[in-house]
Length: 306
Image (cartoon, rainbow, N blue to C red; front, side, top):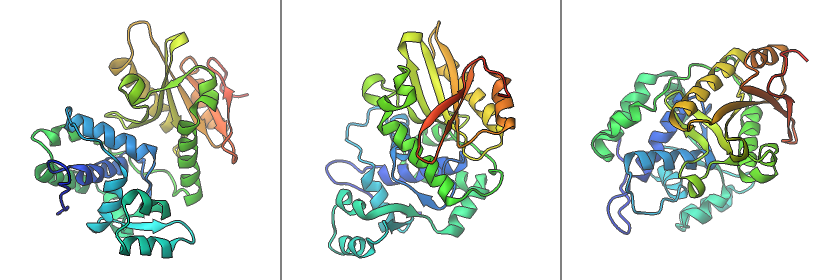
C-alpha cells in the first residue's frame, strides 16, 4: 500500500495513514458497520486520540478534513455527494478546490463494498494492514500501541438498516453538538473535551472498544459512560457497558469518584429492561424517538420490568 506523503509546511505528515488506521480500528470495534465512512465528530476524535498516542509531542495543527478528502486521491475510497450535488462535487474535483470547500458537497466516503466485507470479516487482514502502515509510515513502537487498541467486536445480530445506522450517528452528533441542551447536560454532566480536560469524550478509545460518549458530573463526582445500543442484544450491550465502567474506574476515576452508565436505545423491550435492572445500581436506561428526543425510562435502582 502506497499513500502519497503530505510534506506541506514542514516534515512528512502521517495524517492519511493515521486516518486509515483509525477506520480499520473502528471497523474492528463494530463502530463502522458498512462501507460508508462519515466525516463526523467520532472519526475526528479517534484520529486525534491515535495521533496523540503515536506522536505525543506533535507540533502541527491537525485538520481531519484533509486526509478524508485526499484518501480518495490515493484510491482508498470514493467521495459520495450529497443528493443533487454530483455536478458540484465533480467540478470541485476538476478545479482543485480546497478540501474544506469541496467537502461541503460530500455526504460520506465509500470503501469498495467487497473490500469492506473482507475487512469486517477478517481480524487477520486488518492486523496485517495495520502492521504495514506502522512499518511504512509510523514511528518505532507504533504497532505495539495500535495492538492495544485492536478489538474484534464480532458480528452484529442481524443486518441493520441504513436508516437505523444513520439515525444513531445523527443522534450521537446531535448530543455532542448540543450537549448543554441535552438531558445529560441539564443534569450537570460535562462532556469531556480536549480544551477542558485534555481528554476527548467522543468515541473514547479503550482496549475493550470505544465509549460513545464520556462525561463527568462534578457536583456528584460521577463519571458517566453513555452508550447507544447499536442493534446489539440486551445482554451484549449491558456486558459491554459494564466493561467500560471497569475501564473508567481503572484508568480515569480518582478515589471517591462514582462511575455509572446510561444505555440509550431506540425502544426498550423486556429483555433490555431486565438486563439493565439486574445492574440497576450503576446502569440507567434511556430511549430516543424519531425526533431525536432522549428521555430516561429507568433511573438507577429501578426494577427491570415497569
